[in-house]
Length: 552
Figure 1 (spheres, rainbow, N blue to C red):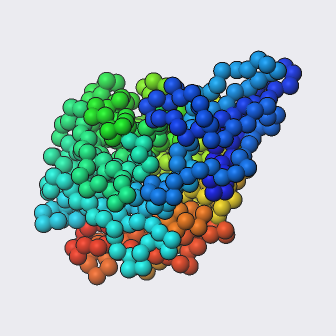
Figure 2: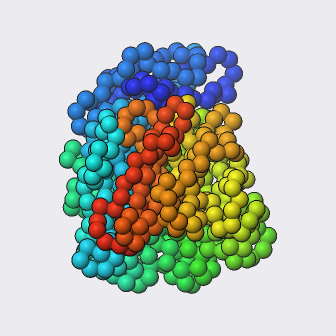
Figure 3: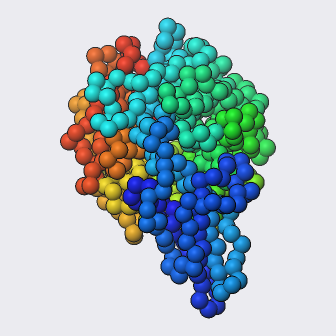
């Protein structure tokens, strides 16, 4: 089962046939009166749209669903269905929700996606305190003077906090219709680390954040080194958030150095619950770095619950023997009770080698083949497949049993340059060409200029050849271009996904001040002839603006 919007406010609902004897029909109901937190109690007393006795496997309402034209623009709908054979019908499915007339990453609810760019080494009167800059989208895109709409600084104002070392759209944690933002500050308090949640509103992000900390914080835990919106893992209508602490030494799996932990926090009507829903730890060897990368995997098995994936690039055991930094990725499945704390999949490179660092970057990339299941992309920037540290990325397809163990597609940078580190950053790019399939963005942040490659999805899966290679437009070497990449959502509301690429090493009149570059999507794909350059708004050097970028 899946629902998606191909035209404004007229979503398409699709489902698989049930294996019953005789003719089967389907009933479907769509309602906007269900309440988050009480989803299973929703009775659908006055559905906005419904159909009964349908013998097809998809349906689209003839008329647009009603939505709000004021902030937050759009409306959330819940939907359910059942199968019938004559007068005998199955129970209704658990209601699922769908955002209609809304775009992901819309902090101020105006109908346009927004952006966040991290600059974790801005001093702010101290040393490496860090900042994050927010840019609001609009009909003409980012404002013509490229000025940021909001600046968020380290709330604790502590030196070496590295606020903004990780940034992610958190989804809608309190189900108020506005997207929220999560920011990691892994260097705070001797690298114990914190993460901060900023809640969206009609005025933008509330400048007073909610702080998350490790349950039993110790120096060098690096809590907040990675953050991500987890999606709605328990189907209660509130999105959840995940925070990695890859430097944590001891876990319930064993004791050692830098084994790593990832903490999942549940959303709710007041924002987020202070105690972690679950803390996951798999690391068993020193320097496994479990939690180095975290992501929502989408719904890889189609059961209506969001799933999560966690990278452990320092894992030594992979393949038939132990090595060094081969890497693994672990998949955890959502359920009505939350994340099941035992991984259902342990993913590895097809031919694991030492120093591959498989799992250094992970991203749920949506549904790239249109089959209703989410896909996962994993970066392995240290692989030597064609040249030293050339890097690779792997696509794992979802299905009714979860992710396939073997990658469906293996991606390699066609340039095959030494130290290109293809796969050092990976992201879903939404649908950049409007063909109905989600696309993928892979960063190759080489020691020199770097580049980002766009791959288009399609009915047969992801193309192995990039549709476009975006070359560093800043002109100088060592810009760290593509160190951070992200789908930017739909910044200007034209129906095409946009992308943003960070270049934290760009000098811009200083040294390593940093930049980020926004590229628009079109019916032909990403247009690299019209880049919009965002430069470090601060005046200092070594700010590393663009180290991370977020927008979906």
